[in-house]
Structure formats: structure tokens, C-alpha cells
Length: 396
Image 1 (tube, rainbow, N blue to C red):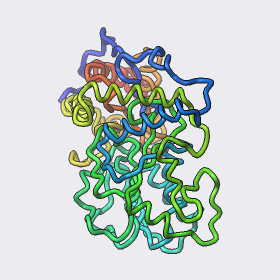
Image 2 (cartoon, rainbow, N blue to C red):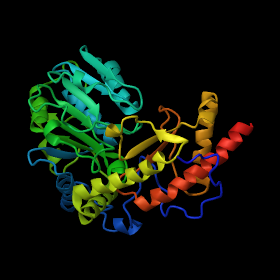
Image 3 (cartoon, rainbow, N blue to C red):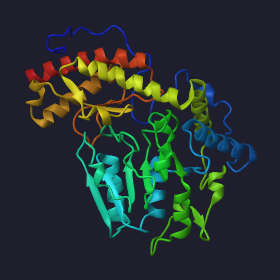
Image 4 (tube, one colour):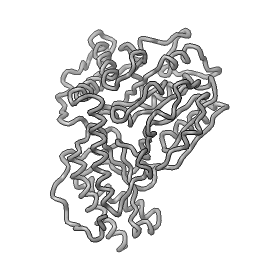
């Protein structure tokens, strides 16, 4: 392993071509320019035939590129991934008990909503700390189950869908926002899948994608939550029947045609580079570039301790240099922020600080729209910035 204190602290001479490593909104697809949006139907009603056709194009591309089963429904909904998840929680939970899995901040947020806002009586929380997964063998699938496929703020993902039985009684509601297009979602094991354009393929923000299995549709049409007010943007049924037009190019509220056009552009690029498997391979190669560096670098390690559950998109790192970990927590946090700030000022890496609720460290997006060469160029800069800030921290 490289001892950073002995490493050459000279300024690296090669910068990433694209310094955008934010975990949301994420980097645009390679080669993107504003001209990609030149065909957007701006100034048109989203309910006009050409606009509805373009929205349907986005839905069709989602099905093709993600390989969503034909009998699953796909809709574009308000309020990003958060809105899509909340629609499922408010519209479907309460028919039976629910197991909530949480190992990072977004999963914890869904627990708060179910316990304190929906105030369901029968809620069981299976929790793990950052860097770990709950014991998946303890999940009770006679109940509904809510979980994130990939912990965006912890860099921990479920290894696969094998832990979910095909003959489950309850629904599985999966927040897949930092997993879609980069990890292998097993739709046969998932009844509700949500994600947002701004993470999955570097699209624009504000809209969410909601994917429903036939079992989820059945729940919506047969279960009416008692004494639960349902805001208009959460309503998926009318008169006890699914509002099917939401999944046929109509939307609950006004959708941005610029965002739609950008999503279409990103997914058409995904098809051109080889489809789902190629996109997954790009993310795997990106994560490997970071992993190869971590293996030979003494001062840093993954937040996720088990390689089998490490994310290939939201890669989270922690500082393990003993000189630094011996410092007070607030000094460590200040050092990590200084590394992030230094790289930002150098226009080398933007927005790579750990999430505000996560342990001190770094979070580097390695999804499909990032180029592996840019990550390989980033790592010497991480070494350089850490060396500078460690020296300053120990001298103060």
C-alpha cells in the first residue's frame, strides 16, 4: 500500500475531462450538449398529442432499456423519486403489517414517514449502521416490505434479489433510485420500483418514475386506507379503479417537456452504447477504478466493509489514516471538507463530500454516465489533496 506521507505531494498534471462526480443530479451522458434538447416541445401543452407521444416515448424507452416485464406499468409522477415512493407508501400500506429496512438516510426517511406520518400500528424496523446491511434472513414476507436497493448515502446495496421469495404474500416496495440502469433489478421479486431521472442516467430533476407489478395494481384497486386523506398528486385510483392514463402518456400534473426530452436523449444514448448490460458494465468498470486505487492506498477505505454489497454507483469512502483518525471527530470532519473544497477549487471534482447524515468521508458517483478515464485521473488528486490537508491539520 502507498503511504501518503511518503508519496509525492506534487500537483498532478492531468485533470478529469469532466469533474462532475455528484451523486445527484449526476453527470450527463458523454458528449451531451444543450443541443440535445433542441427538439423539446416547449410552449406546448403536455396534454397535446405530440407531447403525450413524447412522454410515451420516455415510458417505452424505460421499459426497453430497463427490461421491465410487459405486464408491469410505468408512469411519470411528481416530486422525483421521493414523490414516487410516497405515492406507494400512502396508497398501499396498511393492508397488512410492514417490515421497513434501513441502513442509510433515505431508508431512515421512509421509516419516519411510515411511523410518524402514516402512523401505522404494525411496523417492524430492521436497521443496520452505515456500511452494513440488516439481516435479510429476518425479513417476514407475509408482510409488506419497504427497502432501498442501493443505499445512496452509504454505498451499500443488496447483493441480488435471491433473498425475496417468489411466493411472498406481501408487497415489496423498492426505492431503486441509485440502482436503476447500473444494477440488476430482479423485477420478478419487486412489486413497486421507483427512481428518478437525475440519478439514473444524469437526467434533469423534479420527476419520478413509478413502476407497478400486477400485484401492486391489485392492492391499489382492492385496498382503501381508512381515514387517510390522499393529496391529489398521490392519487392513483378513481372509483376503485387504477387511473390507467397515468401509465399511458398522461401525467398527474404538468410535466416539463425539457426534462422529458433530456430523459429520452439519455436513454437513447443508453441503447446506442449497448443497452442495460453495457450500462451495468460501465458502472462496474468505474467502481473498479476506485477499488483498484483503494487497494493500494493506505489512507482510505470503503465505508461498506463487505465487497459483496458495495455499490457500483454511489461509492462511499472513509479516511482510515491512523494519524487522522486519532484526531477529534470535528477535526476529521473539517479535514474531509477541506479535501472536497480543495478539489472543487481546482475544478477537479465537484460535490464529492459524504452525505450530511453519513459518517465523515467522500461519496463519488460511478454510474454509467461517468467515464472510467476520469475516475482514474481523479485518484491522484485525492491523494494530493489529502496529503495537503493532513499536513495542515497535524500542524495546527
